Image (cartoon, rainbow, N blue to C red; front, side, top):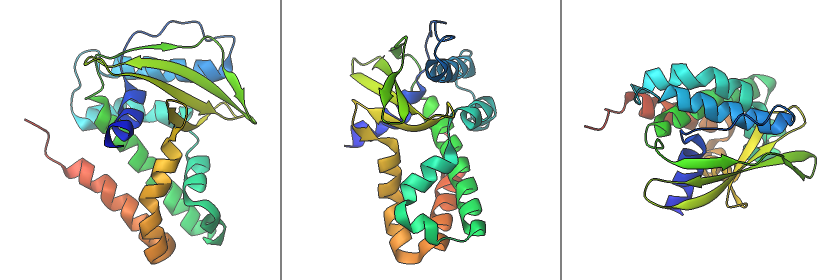
Amino acid sequence: MRLMRRLILALALVAGTVPAFAADDPAVAVVDGLYARFDAAVKNGAGTLKDRIDAVGPTLERSFDYPAMVRLAIGAKWAEFSPEQQGAITEAFRRNFVVTYANRLARAAGAKFEVTRKSEASGTNQRVLTHVTTPDGDDSQIDFVVNSDNRIQDVLLNGNVSEVAGQRSSLGQPLKAGGADAVLKFLRERTDGMLNAKPAP
């Protein structure tokens, strides 16, 4: 499970060469642009975490639907939060998501992947399939769930290991222990922990 979580969070950010075939499919274009930005961010080396945050943050902002993701991750309790709490948690989730992906991007360089030319219907959403092979030979399918606004609201490993479900699991304990305030504190502390961590030698 640890390997699967690492893959879904890190390999979705793998750098490589993405063919420019997505213009006729908006959902594919979102994923194509995302990978292209990640590739550019590490083209000349991983740089610092701040460098990667600055490089990929705006693209993540355009590509992912943070309000939808955090609402799904919290579940039914979301409706009990005040608008102020919802806004603060969404911002904390966004910041955590950007830092998490920028942090893991440094370790994902060197993998190879393919993006399908057309998305597939998945309920009211579209699913864009990508195929990822890591430098050490791990082979996985990474799917992006793109909603009607052409923004990503989930990432799936091998079709069924969900990024949003992983977030729900992480937030479950603080949510049960202290509601909105505990979730907000948890997200902020998790983000600060990554930002303050010493780089690996």
